[in-house]
Amino acid sequence: MLRVGRPATMNGWRSAAKPEGRALYADTFTAMLQVMEHREANGSPPDVAAAAIARALTARRPRAVYLCGKDSRRLAILSGLPAPVLDMARRRVFRLPAPGSLAS
Image (cartoon, rainbow, N blue to C red; front, side):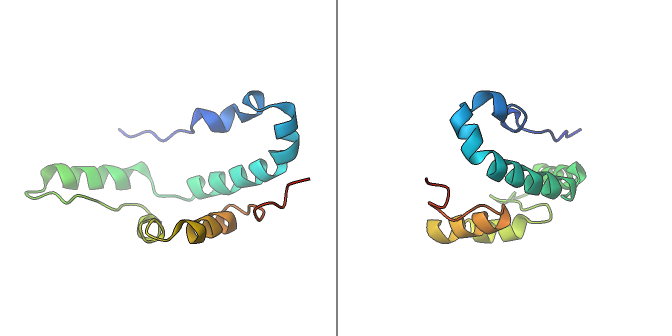
């Protein structure tokens, strides 16, 4: 059985951050968490990963990489992009502000 859970950093970020950091980034971080929670809730079930693992274990000649899940191909393509383009894509997906916009 595969079980999907949240990383501890998502649950305890408020207690780990300094007060000035929380004040500066709380709204942005909360918005990013909402996007992540929505994507997690609408993602592929663990059975999809389990099926890919079973295929890899029983293949006569296993591949180096098995893509599985709703966004796996899109993420694989994005991983090959230059860092600035990938950063821009992440900002759009997670609705993050432009670099330097939070500076006082």
